[in-house]
Image (cartoon, rainbow over all chains, first blue to last red; front, side):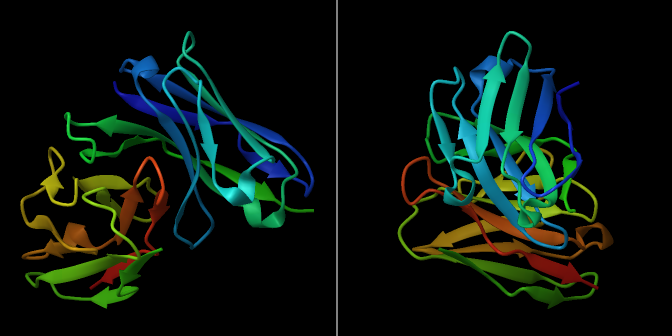
Length: 124
Length: 106
């Protein structure tokens, strides 16, 4: 089955750290750029970070740059997100997401596979 | 910026509704639409502004007119009640962002 399964969420105190994992299965993980997207309770979707298929390039939104680190292990079909210096406003469901290019036209791409999400709660 | 409207929409089964996203600059056809139901991950509906994802009913359609993008749902079904997001996904600036979401209620 083609799927993404996140784990590692939980309750953490402000200033703390957490490592999220995402296990990919059913597709050739090493061929895809991968993303993390989060959703605060009752709020919209927020792009966080991206990593290219070989892990050579990573991108971050400004608010998490230098606090969060994305990485991947293609030999294990795993995506990771290291969360650091956590703030109350980082409380959210964190989704692991695959980006697919559907054909040669560059614009024909989208986030077509999402995990079920893992909840991170930052609170004292 | 990517401005999605309306934030809330109320409609009846059988109605047609349209949701709009306006980009603050030219993003070409780098726009997708997603549906999200409570407690679930988003589901891809449309990519490339107007191409229907496999398995998505044909009552969903997307259109681009310059920097304005629309998602139209014809003949609303009960399972269509959800929150919808537009998604700009340029790999270079102007970058990646989501619209604020539109909650569609009965």
